[in-house]
Image 1 (tube, rainbow, N blue to C red):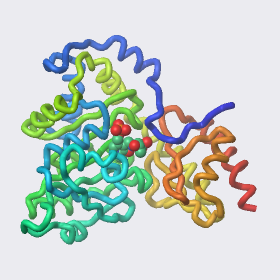
Image 2 (cartoon, rainbow, N blue to C red; image 1 turned 120 degrees about the vertical axis):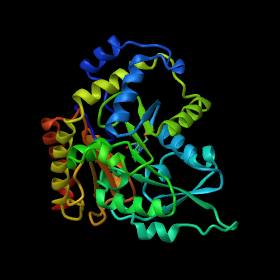
Image 3 (cartoon, rainbow, N blue to C red; image 1 turned 120 degrees about the horizontal axis):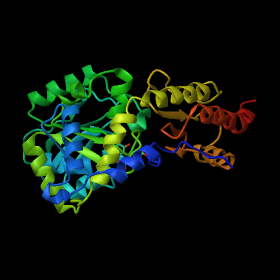
Length: 347
Ligand code: TLP
């Protein structure tokens, strides 16, 4: 049976071209700083984000958590959005690794405001945790791949400057925001003290993320990476995939966005199903089946029986993600499967 896997853009396997780049990569011992391919990727990504330095790490989670560790002291509080990846999907590691607590603010489409942040800031009094960091996410995964508007980021930066707070961006899918808006990565980067980006999401590399920031920040991150056992040796074979992805898989994200849009419009056309079409601009579609009359998990199971894989995100919501391995025919086929599973209920 043919399978259409829309669970995540993390499921892609390296393409033949990427595998060739991996096979031909020059490598060295990266713990000694001697892997030329790692060094090239770090330099390139730092440049793209307008930062002085970058550090290759194993995963997006590691990139976010090392960044939190660098910015905070135990007992601090990190202001983030309530649906953010850091708050929901990183295993409670801010508490485990950095001894900090999170202050989740309910955003709108993943976007929080300076006013919300001001209200959340703690007085400088020994009773309170100390506000230590503001962490944003762009694109925002659980909100549906939504793009954090640049003006909103600028306004938060002004607040952060006023209260002397650093800002971190979980930019696992910042590539998607960049391709969709045409806003240079560097423009996004300049409002943050640190930005993490991933090669293993829409870009299609098998492994790897990058932390970018100042030289001082990255030196600190380097030490924490080592402490976490994240110092890798001939990791240039992984960086080669990242370099290849930047050359060949960045601009094509626009295709993923078009395909996600087709799914979004189709599902939104079904009675009782809602997709926020205004905000669905990248490769993630969150469909809310709240008036459809069946639990998200039941619908996901029925879709699976037909060969379409997706992830329920709540009792009523299901996430569908387009990626490198989904082409136009797959989208046509997906719509056919949606019709089989959903239309009957619609009649
Ligand atoms: N997200 C995964 C799951 O963990 C939910 C996915 O399938 O989307 N930041 C953001 C915004 C992410 O979406 C993810 C992965 C990460 C960080 C963590 O990346 P990894 O999986 O490399 O640790």
